Image (cartoon, rainbow, N blue to C red; front, side, top):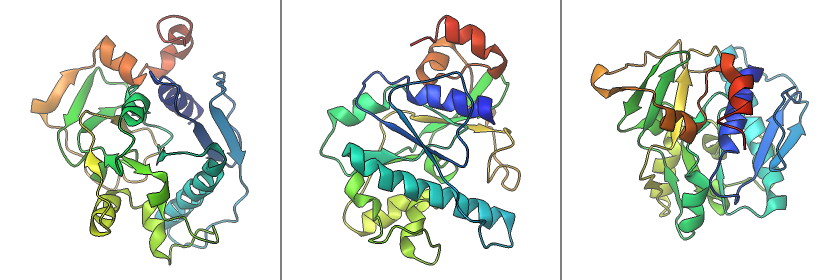
Length: 240
């Protein structure tokens, strides 16, 4: 998991614009080589989730962490926020695009990539990417519906913003603040890592017509390097 997280956070910090901050909420700070001044770590000690189902418990833990991060983000006066799963990668163009479009409610990633760890090919998902991957919504900060008393509770409606990522688009549209589709593939959903909440219970299809060779330019855009080559790539092409 540590190597997956390090690749993810390198991907986030690979932005072409420096108008961003990264808040990592964790039970224990990961021991990684990569350090960056844009990263803030928050260590938490949440009590065990009162859920008999491990799947639901995982949702509760994730929701608590996202809420904690959103509250902590206030000190940076954010304009937009995006939740990123710790094993995914994002496009280096996101921060620049958001900075150039400051008057939108936000965006959902309708088109993105699916990638099975270790493969030489990647698959383009042409629509509904936001339904399968939690790394999918960029939301104007004031639309996050943060509770007055910031305590995570699945019984309240606002939890949908933290774990039910596929519902955010519809909820905001109903409230008159619709998100726009991001006009380019914004993220890579990396599966078969052992960390996916959904993968293993939901069958993900890989259409051969959407398969393409994983090119060097795509690796650079998303910082998608092979985990076993971490140290080599860090010292050469991907060093920033």
